[in-house]
Amino acid sequence: MIQETRIGLARLGKIDPESISDAISHGAYEGFKKALTLNPEEMLSRYESSGLRGRGGAGFPTGLKQKFTSQSCSDCQKYVVCNADEGEPGTFKDRTIMENDPHLLIEGMLIAAYTIGASKGFIYIRGEYNLSIERLRKAIVDASSRGFLGDNILGNAFSFEMELRLGAGSYLCGEELTLLESLEGKRGYPRIKPPFPAEKGLWGNPTLINNVETFVQLPAILINGLDWYTALGTSESKGTKIFTISGRVNRPGFYEVEMGTTLRQLIEELAGGMKNGYSFAGALLGGAAGTFVDESLLDTPMAYETLKAKGATMGSGAIIVLDNTTDRIDFLQNILEFFKHESCGKCVPCRIGTTLLCEMSSQLESNPEILQKMVNEASYMARTSLCPLGQSPILPLKSFERYFS
Image 1 (cartoon, rainbow, N blue to C red):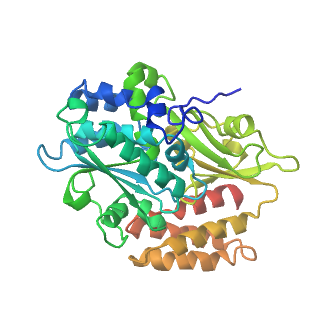
Image 2 (cartoon, helix red, strand yellow):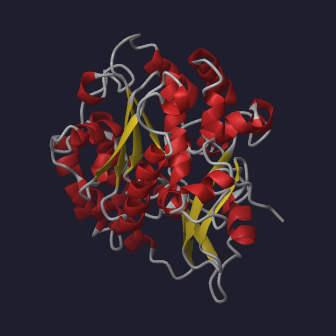
Image 3 (cartoon, helix red, strand yellow):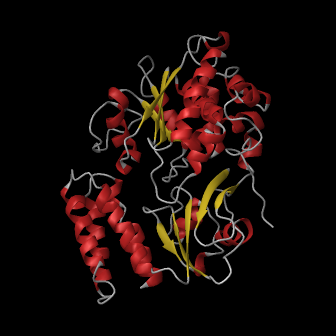
């Protein structure tokens, strides 16, 4: 039977989340202390060699992003920003980390800041995450009082300050450039790329943006070494991934496993299989901006390269399990209504396109052929929308057509 391999969740249930002393006694900040014994160039090399990829959904190489941000300028202000605005339906991994081990996130951001030469950091957190907010606020105060934040940290020349900023419920602000607009006090509208945040991010300065799960991988890589980390996962997807499983399974919840674990192992072994009276009828991987799969992909390794080869995506790690009683059309309509509701309206393809998709979906039951028109409309949106929200409906629609039409 498959076993969990925990990095981001390693201290979950073992420490008091509100006690920095308890966290330190279980290894908190040891990775950061080791980082301070190395120079930033060595750090950049280690993370680039680690194969770590962003856990927010896109899977961009973390070390490469650090390198781009570090090399943007030598003496300018740089920022580290944590995207904790976890708004993807079916996803609750970042909340779990922040509620149970807030010091691990702070440590990961400290390591990233030291690596790229940043002196200021922000955690942009979903406003509804009350317990996470409460615990992070306390953790930041406690870390400052212990000398892990502030000037000349632990007697070194490195200084770093951190602030917590609350989101206001916009799904769109989970997109990195829109998040930066919100951080700057502006309305959450998307920016046009390029320039990318590594070159011109927060207030026009180089900015490293990662999500919670990505940051919390950083300490373990330093503590345990590259050989240990690169032995986890697959050739192109290193380390572990936290999956959040929901639906009519016996043990819904969060599971951290090596990359390459199959969907069948996750659902049948870790989540305990389907409840009595229900059978597996598919799954939505990655939340609303993800892809549907059917039973033919149950034995596909959950890794970036293998899922891409099958036309699927890992996304945020959400796995919403469908069963024999699920109304698939109604399920799809809920996704499309979600996109319509969350559209900011800045660009015409998304503003009008999401409305059209909802209108057409109401005809699916009586006119299945309209699905092809919906896919065509979503393809146009993907080519012409300004940000990932308008570019996303093609993913669930095309995969719905492939597996369920």
